[in-house]
Image (cartoon, rainbow, N blue to C red; front, side):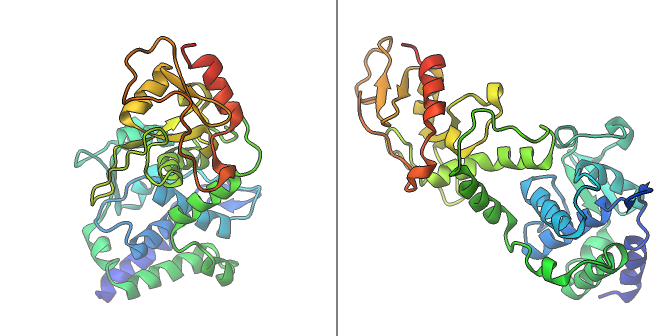
Length: 316
């Protein structure tokens, strides 16, 4: 470990540029983002010098935020520090390997804008090399906590999920067993919560159905986790923005296409209803056949969602 380089970045991490509020003090967004990045490097989720604004980083940011920032103060907007960290001199936004002009991003970027116009961020080479040393990483983490969150309870930090994505998937499954709401969108559509739920929806649905098609039981997986089964929204996402797990069903590509076209629908008894407009269905659909359901009946497709599809998506 280069102690001169460590001292340099301890100084940089301890003097971040921050906006201030007369009631709440200095904005915590940049130190929380840096803590999340350190967490993800330590977990092995950031294994190369490239930081993507994805669901894993967002969850790491969110859990750090909840443990450090008092409620009813600052909003947990990850897009702001991700964009403005460039002012610290060790963080560069890139697109196709080329640095991005931050002027084009404006002063109030959205998550959607950043994930569209930017591939991710790259750290200075010296900083990235330093962060491969666990002693240096721990020193930088401690310095961030002591400098910006001296009141932080170490017990809260110790309770952070070891794997935020797996933890959030299980949390969303548990939450989904409560009452189903047709319009589940509560968060602003550019919020961390909204984005994370949308990105985790396919993982949750495929997991609930054990990567098998609910209609034909097709199950094909490769070594790298690729599969022919897709997570289908029962009520279309473009109309409802509803990523509730009970608005989902696992279907192979052929049955996903047919379901969206209204060639078949599903009864409240979870049996197949074939459209009278569909001909030559042999080998594709069997009328009145039961579908495959999740092991937990409380996570089966919601009757309200199926009713919507029968009335609006199905070619009766």
